[in-house]
Length: 158
Image 1 (tube, rainbow, N blue to C red):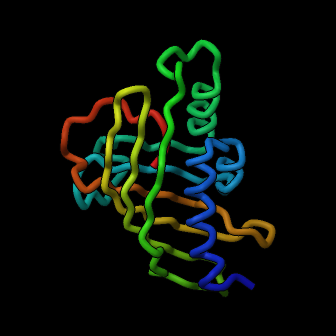
Image 2 (image 1 turned 180 degrees about the vertical axis):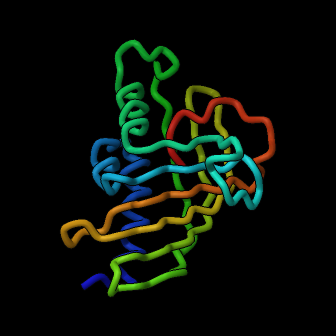
């Protein structure tokens, strides 16, 4: 039986996996049809008809992770590091009968590499489901507060 505390712990655990660059374990948190979406426009509701900063299925996420781990990825020598600072996640949807849950989290995210340090403020929405009794991500939506700004390369995952 999934509890509200399980949902909150899941979000914190996911952030820790990213901060510790445990990307393969992070990928395991996704459902087979899971997606990672970062809209380009504030309040964007359609990821198909409007361009996005990122809109990846599990296959593309795996490619990104392999790139990050690659020895020939010169943009990652030395490797980028990140830190998530999360407010307490809020439960926006809890349907134990169908196994669908929604968790919203405000956060600050820092990504650093050498002398460069970038700070992003964002809201993350996790649409979660259960797969074989375990929580899995169906959709992780990351809305940057300043999504319409010009960005350099975001190397890791918010």
